[in-house]
Image (cartoon, rainbow, N blue to C red; front, side):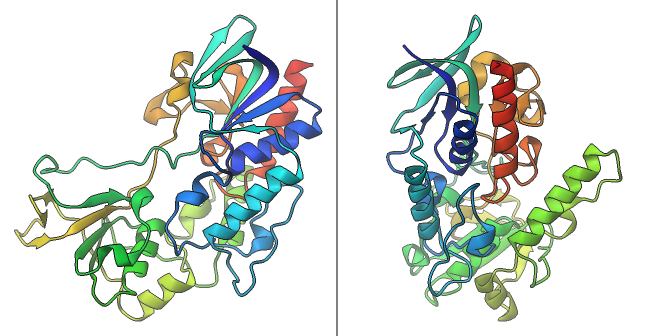
Length: 351
């Protein structure tokens, strides 16, 4: 068993930000990453995905993301290159591929069990994100459906659906972006369905404004002021250029959600049917199964936290899962501050 001060679980953007600040606290640590190469979830996204924000506003602590030539908003491949360079630049001790199976209490330490041996740590930072746990809603007829269906995580490019009709489910950013991507092919039929009419943000709003809104909401809540509503008060969909173009061309007209799946497609409440492939852009849940032995999960699968620290286990910090683990902590620019706070708390705990 290997002994260290801190084990960071996950080598994506949150894990790297944690590593940067743990290094500044002069702590001994290791980052365990289940992926075989650097880049976290960004290396598994669809081909046309771009950031919401310019490079300078999409950076981890200590290192500005360089601009991508010819692109105002960098693509996912540029982010992968940036993350790979980041961990090399700071010499972060990433071990991969290492899959963490479980975290157990072991006296005054935590035991991290993996497929590559066990680590004994005085503290653990869980930074596994949500990409690895896609959410699929329960829909009548699922057991009958024999057609093609996939989640956001499985979508790559519109040419994969040449000659097919596709139903995209979901009124968030991934649903709008994938639907817009499919409109670039004239040989792909598209129906976009949402639970409620889509709510686009103003065209001039990008990730910079979203980060500011999330930060302002957290500050207001911390100070006991009126909830500002944060990002949700602005809308659901960022009008990135491809989405804006498809919307303005009249190609993004959302239909009501279907009521059931059939053997080869879907059916609406009025009995209308369509034969189609289905892409579920229905979000994610926190990937926290490795923490199950600690018995900390509450309602909706979340672990109660005070900042990033687990309320029921002060040696555990959670980073990058959403606003409940720090304002905008699931974003590149937003994860730096909660990572800094977590590292400081860990250093104080370890004395």
